[in-house]
Image 1 (cartoon, rainbow, N blue to C red):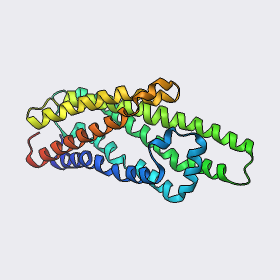
Image 2 (spheres, one colour):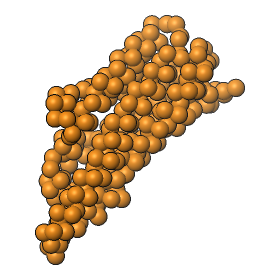
Image 3 (cartoon, rainbow, N blue to C red):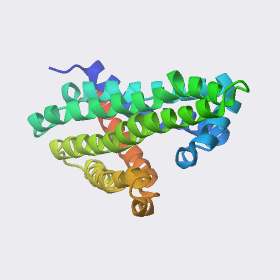
Amino acid sequence: MFTLNQRTATGALLLVFPFLIQIPFAILTATFHYPDILREPADVILKQYAQGGPSLTIAWYLFAMAILPLLAGIVMLPGAVSPRHPHLMKAAMPLGVASAILQMLGLLRWVVLVPLLARAYVDRSTTASTRDAIVVAFQAQHQLFGVMMGEYLGQILLALWTFGVVLSLDWGGALNRVQRWIGLTAASLFLIGSGESLGTVFPALTALGPLPAVAFLVWSIWCAVLGWIVLRSGAARTV
């Protein structure tokens, strides 16, 4: 059985997350040219990161930690609502959890690994051969933790979780129908746009470049609407 407080907390978490995540995103956009910087050569990224100093590392840490409300909301959602298809929502929940964790790990590499590589790369005592090794190490972790885990798998799993939630919550009402179609659209865009991550290997896929950003914008609207519906239902006891 879910409680009124659980409903309210879950709704608030899902409602707040899309707005909270914009704060570190905006900071990184202004100070680090994120996300365009991700497709720049390793030399450019490492030098610019070193110039950013500790404040840039803090911004990346805040970016990673901003995912925690979403992670909590994903875990709490099955117990906070009465879905038409509860087994579908419960099956989707681990996919959402995995997506949040993978994206957090992808972001945390900028906190625990990239600063070390950047400092060593710009150090005047570093030899040319060592710099070449640092570039290889950076590219390897960038592809593994960033492209494969954070972007590709993270987006696909988030899309599958969204599909599971949307299809399990067969509620009536105009607002619920709106969130349903927004969710289906966002999840579809995520699945298609995830191919952009592979553009580092298959250049033709870079044509999908705008889709992940559009998908996240649409998904953020869906997440906020879903959070509002759950939050309102917690106050009105109507779910």
